[in-house]
Structure formats: structure tokens, C-alpha cells
Length: 176
Image (cartoon, rainbow, N blue to C red; front, side, top):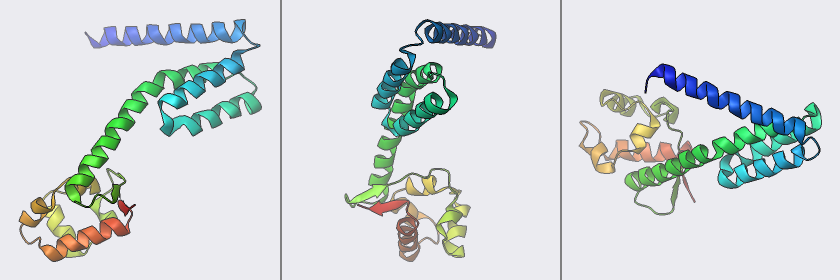
């Protein structure tokens, strides 16, 4: 499918969605706010990570701006499934990374994926060893096993202990 046809289909879907939103807004003004709250509740049920923000946005629109918020609620509902799938994949990835880095099952892993390793505050020697092996983010570091780290040239037990200590200290991995 060519890029032009993708853009045409996307524009068509956007126009149809907007027309339906406007028709519902104008036709059902008496119960549009209740319908918007229902749609945001459904979206929050599907994707819990965005639930509070969506509810707060809808409350603001209905109380301050004076509109029903139906258009925004429908966009929340349409985006809930992809966001929930992304969150599920992210949680699975965090568990897999934590299992690789620490064997301790009492450790919870919080991803700050693209933070540079400088955020850990490692010694210059350990930092340089990691940079020499093209490890530039905390995510890359935590995705490696201890054995892989120890196989690096000049990376010994002391450096491994320092990395473990800094990762816990900075909150990337927190004991539960």
C-alpha cells in the first residue's frame, strides 16, 4: 500500500470519526456528558495506567470548558487498547530484564529505559569500561547478565558490585 493511499485512508477515518462525534454532540446534548463519562470509564478499565489522567481531563472539560467531552472521550476509548498492549509488553520486558540482572525474586524493576549510564553516578573507571563496550543507557546495562558483564575486559567483581549498588541506590531496581 502506498504512502498516499495510507494518508487518504487516515484522513477519511479522521473525518468520519469527527462527523460522528459532532453528530452525537449535537443530537444528544442532554446525555452526551454521561456517555463521555461512560466511555472514559471503559477506556480506564482497559488501560489503567492512563485512567486517572483521562478522568481528570474529562472533569476539566465538563466543568471548566462547558462541553460534554464526547470527542475526547472517544479518542480515549480508541487509544486504550494500543496503550494497554504497550503497557503489557513493557511489564513483561521489565520482568525479563530483572530476571536476567538479579536472581533475587524479591526485586522489582522500574524501567527508565533511555536514561544514560551517567545517571548512575558510577566511578570514572567503571563508566569508561561500559562506554568502551558501547553500553550507553541504563536499559542496555540492565538487559545484560552478570556473566556477560564479568566477561568484559577489566570489568571485575568490584565493578559489578558498584553497578548493583548504584542501580539500587538510584531507584532503577528497588527491593520490594
